[in-house]
Image (cartoon, rainbow, N blue to C red; front, side, top):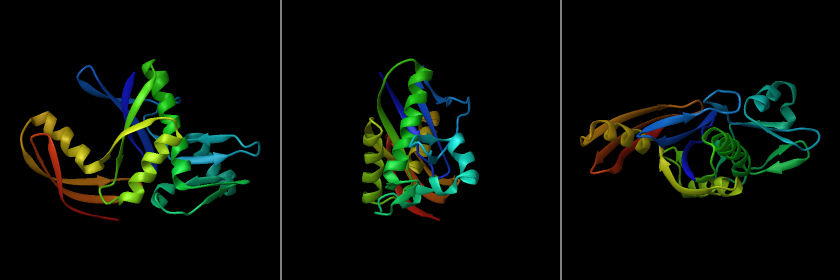
Length: 194
């Protein structure tokens, strides 16, 4: 059983796995590494995720949601067709889609996931992100700050203790972090962003 990493993004999301000594991006069912973080509900109540849902933003805006990650940890509800969803419920559909694509690609069950979040996410947002994983049927082993993940990746490439200035140019956010990485420990010294 595999453990995957998920970048649950505001605009796009993706999955990755560490195997054979390297990180490997997981393609979705359309062969792309990026899955749009968009959810749509059809007239029959079926839930669509990703590229197909993104196309429905134009044709069915009343039953389609995007950028809901910005509301994680809040009680805002999104009404799609006849149903209402919390942001973590919408996020769970995206997580489930990535887990299903990973299961298909890797040919094995997915046991756990690590999900990255912006460094400025407060506790309610982190709890909501873990809940999204649980709703998707996956154990979220760990929530990791996005700049911490970037610093760790660089640290393992160089094996040198360093202070990093990390720019995270996301589709919905821009973050800048100063991160100290030493002895496989990561300390976020400062964070700013929009």
